Image (tube, rainbow over all chains, first blue to last red; front, side, top):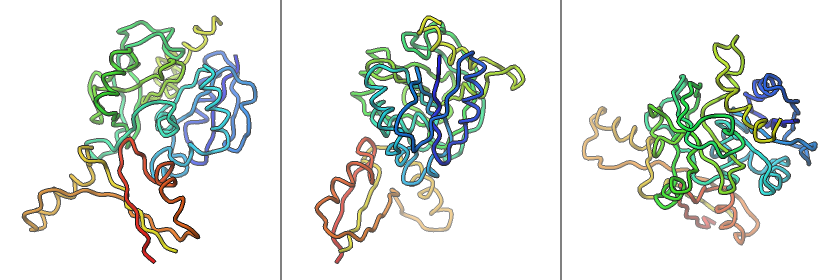
Length: 220
Length: 74
């Protein structure tokens, strides 16, 4: 399986994500922001960082990068897409995921490890997990406070589209939401960084529970 | 012509920046401040104002969380 990782000016988890893809046992493919196609990859990770300096709003400028055209087509045709942290923000700005990520309620950048619970396993990025499974994953963000209007939140809950939920809410996120998926379930956005815990040398490889799911879903 | 766009958090959306500033003002002796909301001011020189509204909707504001208004200054 070939997994693409988008690289925008200001992305800073792209190398980690490419490394994690190797650790998964898949082939990493760099997708430059100016690229006009996805090089035939089977799945895409939009990594964390501060694309375009977070100018205007996190993800607001990246959403119009060249590579996003083919990425939106890929997502709409059912291709598995995972947005991590700034990648999650980019996907909400691109309207591939509902809601928005607001400034953390505490007004502080949160850099920590948090416990999350897997709430839905019928997505390509959690298919290898168990419902209720608890993971310890790093977070590092200033805007991780998930917001959606009441009707959207109710819909997300009804449709089982909350993918990860914090056990202890670090940022004021609505309903303790750490990750959600699209209506078709193939696009997932999460604030925690699974790629940063993809090797025991980094202290843990629990992040592979998430990342390797896409291989399970593809029957690899 | 010059246009001025004002973007701010929608009513009821948490505004931690405004909240932090509201908390800081009394500490400096400024009493009686009930609320503070912080937004973003964007000034642009444009040939025509025809597309300003579309610019606001597509990029300058995020309608999920922000509201905007704009005016031609001169």
